[in-house]
Amino acid sequence: MNAVPLLLAVETATAAPSVALWRADALIGERAADPSRPTAEGLLPAIDALLRDANAVLAAVDGFAVSIGPGSFTGLRIGVATVKGLAFGTGRRAIAVPTLAAIAAHAPGPAPVAAVLDARRGEVYAAGFERGRAADWLEQQVIAISALAARLPAGCRVVGDGAALCAEALRDPAALLPPPYPATTARHVAQIAAGAWSRGEAIPAGELVPRYLRRAEAEVKRTGLRFEPKEAES
Image 1: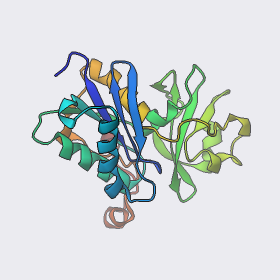
Image 2: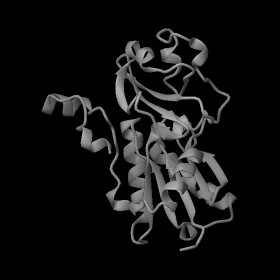
Image 3: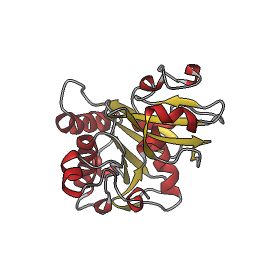
Image 4: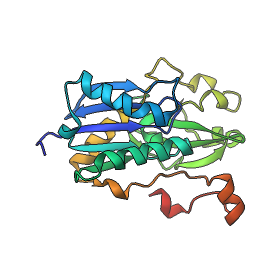
């Protein structure tokens, strides 16, 4: 592997799947998957086009990063399966990046940030961050939109595709941070992964497991439990 690794990041947990290439502290390229095609059909062509645009080949990729959840159940399964497939037989390792951490990176700076994704049923997936690190005032969880405002500190910005859903519940609607920030999030998955890679946090790609937080309806009916156990979120 290169001393300065080339990382390929995959983000499929949100409504706008994307892929990115990253080396050292620089984004080499990013590409959104074709929104007119299902994620399972559009992801590999997006990766091929990204590599082609960067004059790179898959064999030159030193490691992978993937948005690990929470988010779309189907999207997460596709992203993780794709990374496992690309890494199969090469010995390449991977970094699992929390989806909400990547979304929070849309709002850089020292102010506290709440990243939120629509979880439906009047709830959002949410987590708080300060200076790029998880904050204890809002641990990653599924939370009712009506309860979110009470958890946010003063000056907090709210970002993500669930932000608009929270407008009425927020004490300060001005805290909402709508676009223009990049609609794609793979660049932030790659950036976070680069730091984790340098700290030796890569794992065999085969060990990647999606973090759904909330169980699918069929599993809720089978087990009677709505949420994954806490240890599954680590």
